[in-house]
Length: 290
Image (cartoon, rainbow, N blue to C red; front, side, top):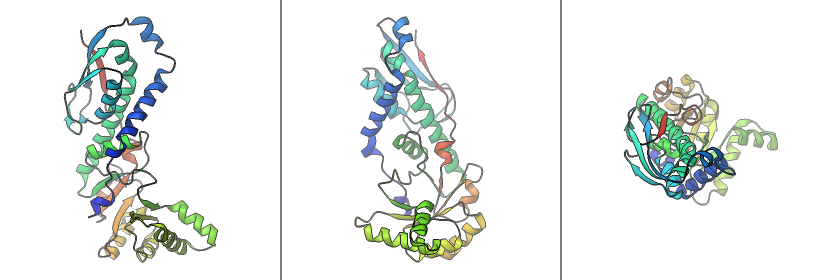
């Protein structure tokens, strides 16, 4: 049941992903790759992209979309979402030498970052029995979210459009508008969302303590996010709201070294910005074959 709340399909956005990849290539290319144009004569070459770290592979869709748009033939040696080892050949390329070299950095940027996200997600997923979701703290938007899925995590919401998420600043703004307490503002925010939510989108609210969580629960949101709430208080909320039918999520400071502890509180999900804003890129290289 709760899986559906925080798992969104990236497939409809793949054309946007392709467009973004090409725009980043154009940013890098600018008025032209002056070094390649000076040094490399027009010719067809073969090349490979190899892993230099162990991890989970992601970013193949992005790499392939750019290379094929430039007329380069691409053969996938390993499927996205698979484990890779140092030395594994990921992609085999054949095409215009200049095009391959011009695209090299953009392709590797996507492959290394997204594989880093998938690898870190997989590590955190293995640390806990509780489901792990990412946040919107991304660089590559839908691509980062897709990498999280490849690593076994959940996408949470993709953007501002697919789920209502009432955050601290929304609550504080209503406090200022009505000159009321945060508890009253929480109730008012949820009332306003209910009034507007004609198409049945999921509704989540971010709270900061036990009192706010209990006040929010009375308004029956789909999800309550316990943001930067101390673990003992998270456990208290879980105990009090266990039978409420509301999905409970812990967030704020969730990292590989404490994700297990957060998961053991009994929440339905933990969400982490660390997955996408602090991941280590998985090292790879492009090599021209003789």
